[in-house]
Length: 397
Image (tube, rainbow, N blue to C red):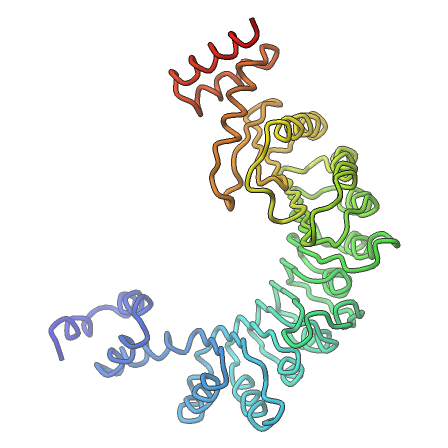
């Protein structure tokens, strides 16, 4: 045994834990041979997070649990990313037996509907965070595991466009639920009576009939919604009307549309409707309108000018509004009063067009508040500002 490992054996348990958490699995296996104490700590970390990406890994883990049944109780997180073997049902039965032994599991991440339904009758007393596929068995599973605080419901990998996506699910009372992500119909089943304050819903119904009623069901519950994110499949004014009616107290709003770029007239009408929406959302602080999700790589001055006018109007209507993210990947931030600064959204590649527009706008618009001149000087250098000002004066004379 080398001197460094010998010295590790004499350290307090807390320090060994801290060192082991940053070690690779190969290093942990080596450390586990040094002493009984380090062996126990190493096994605890190795089996704490179980991620199974294929059948070979699943088979190996089942074998490990069979030889050391106590390792199943060490698991705090289980992530299963593979499809079940329909031709080998005995394999899935074996895996279910392993999951049953994970009585200390906190996090469950399963994407296969078929495998989820095979374990939906289990009770996991410490479960708090779930990512589950859409299934008619969700109600029964969550009814047995009502300790969940964070719930994500996604399309199953086998059937991403399944009819289960829009099928009603048996309502379940989840008193500890704080965060929800999933279809609107699922929201109706799980949010009422919960503590959920952060929700993301996928609106899936026919746009001709307006919103699905999910917002109304949420509004009737005791949930105090603060952050509301919505993935929609159409630009629909009726949806905005429902948001204003049923969720007036939200502080954060994000609306995303993942499909093709909308027709200019539809998008313009949608943007105008935002002003009406903001009159009802008196507590709103941040707003993201991502339609489509990926905006253009470049933005012209006239587009920034139109955004600036919109943001100023919205800022007057909603005095608490602090940030607005728009489809162009522009993030508008309120500096003070109704003074707005344009920059790139953090997830977008940095481009100088917004700062260049701000400098030109500040120099060519004497009626703007003095703060815009200060912002222009902040983003540009003094010599560059002077040169640009001279060019603008020359063009106007």
